[in-house]
Amino acid sequence: MQKLHELYSGKAKSVFETDETDRLILLFRDDTSAFDGKKVQQLAGKGKVNNLFNAFVMEKLEEAGIPTHLDRVLNDTETLVKRLDMIPVECVVRNITAGSICRRLGVPEGMELNPPTFEFFLKDDERGDPMINEFHIRSFGWAEPEHVEKMKALTFAVNDVLKDLFLSGNMLLVDYKLEFGVYKGEVILGDEFTADGCRLWDKDTREKLDKDRFRQDLGDVVESYHEVARRLGVDIH
Image (cartoon, rainbow, N blue to C red; front, side):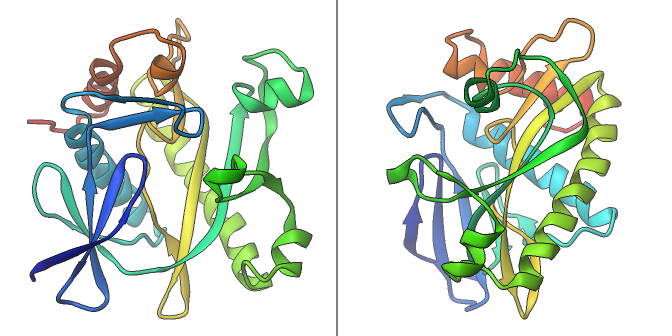
C-alpha cells in the first residue's frame, strides 16, 4: 500500500489517497482550532494522542457491533481507513448541557438530559455548521431517508457504548459529534472520535478534559488528552 497525493486538508487532519482505490490515509496533525478556525495553535504531540486514541475508540465500537471505517494504525500519526462517500451532516448527542445549546436555549451548563438530545448540523465551516432537521436533509438531498434513520440509530448505539466506557475511567461523556459515510451501500461511522469532537468531564470534580481547555484558555490541552487516554488504558507510547 502506497501513500499518494493529499486529497483534503481539514482543521486538524489531512486525508491522502493510496494506490488502493477503496482506502485512504488519515494524518492527525498537531494543529488545533476553535470558533470555526478563528483561533488556531500548534500543540506538540496532539496528533499522536488523537490518532492512537481514535483507533482505540473505533476498535471498541467495532467490538460492540458498530461498523466504522477503521482499517489499521500505520504509525503514530497515520491511520488507514475505508474510503467512504461522506454524508455532509454531523450528528450530535448531548447527555449534559454545555456549549452552544446553553447559548441557544438559555439553559445553564451541567444539566443532565434524560433522554439525551439529538441534533443535526450541516457540515459547512463557512456558514458555521448551521443546525438543520430531517426535512432539510431530505429536501436538499444530503442523505437518503434510510441513511438518516441508520445514522440516528448508530449515533445512539455509540452513546450506549461510550457512556459506559468513559464512566469506567470516572469520566462523563457530556456530548459528541459523529460523521458517517456510505461504503459499499452501508452507512458506517467515519471521521474520528477524539477529545477534539466531544466533551469529557471528570465525574467527581467536573473538570474539563477535552478541547474546551483550548477554547476557554484553561491550558494543559495535550496533557488532558493524555489523562483521558491513561484512564482508559490506551497506550500512548
